[in-house]
Amino acid sequence: MDSIQKNLLEAISGLHEIPEGAYNIRTDGKTEARNSTENIEIVPRESGDGITIHIKPGTKNESIHIPVVLSKAGLKETVYNDFYIGDDCDVTIIAGCGIHCGTADDSQHDGIHSFFIGKNSKVKYIEKHYGSGDGSGERIMNPETVMEIGEDSYMEMDTAQIKGVDSTIRKTTAKLAKGAGLKVTERLMTHGNQTAKSVFFVDMNGEDSSTNLISRSVAKDNSYQLFESNINGNAKCSGHSECDAIIVGDAKVSSVPGITANNSDAALIHEAAIGKIAGEQIVKLMTLGLTEEEAEEQIISGFLK
Image 1: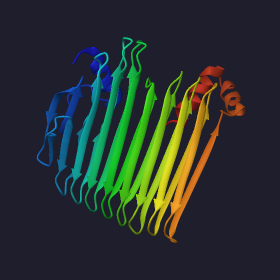
Image 2: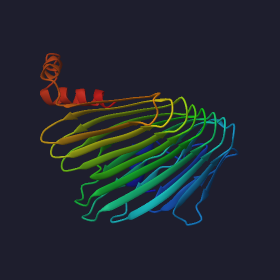
Image 3: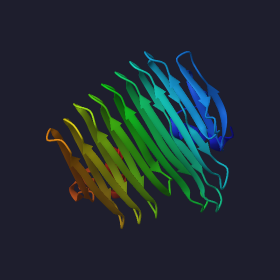
Image 4: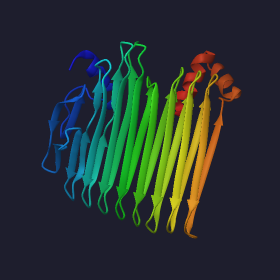
């Protein structure tokens, strides 16, 4: 990999070198490096447009890295990655995409990740998106996550987009079985004329299933953000979603909650708060020696943690 690709890789996954364990590193539309382990098998999809990951039942305390890097001008791709996770597993999956644009050509990565999780398993999924370069072409990322979470299993999804992505549509769909749990934490920042749309569809089909969707976002300049949540309680279950957003400049943010109880024992809650940074917060930090700009950035940094 060249220096640009290495910088992107570090930004989205924290990797400085090839990791230990299972991994699949993709650069400019091709596989750069791949490794399977005794418990985690990574194989190409038959159609050649992604990978399939099989995790054996009982696999504990193992991780998989599957970052994607695009540095070639004008490259556009759609990649499908399927995860089959057995019963009684406890694994961490680190994904993410970085796009560098140095020309007037748009670059785009659409990644569709599908998870099929067995019983009594725990999965942590970390995904980060990042754009760099001073080219006028757009950096476009459209991640889609599809989850089928088995009985008494739990999935935690931590996703972040903090810099450089001009346009994104982030779609998450989940079906939860009996006793299954899902927690999603999303952190977004847009600036300039960027747009970001996050859409969630969650069906809690099993008794005692639960969902918690959390979005923290900052919209600057003339950017636009949409948060849309659709939670369906189809059994005795509990669901919660919240959208907290800070507006800076002339940005716009929309929150569209959708909660539907199809069972009398479904308990569903939605919360939303959108506004600017409180003036007293800025003043308090300025009394400690920060400039107004430094105080604003400090507040935003803490908000997005």
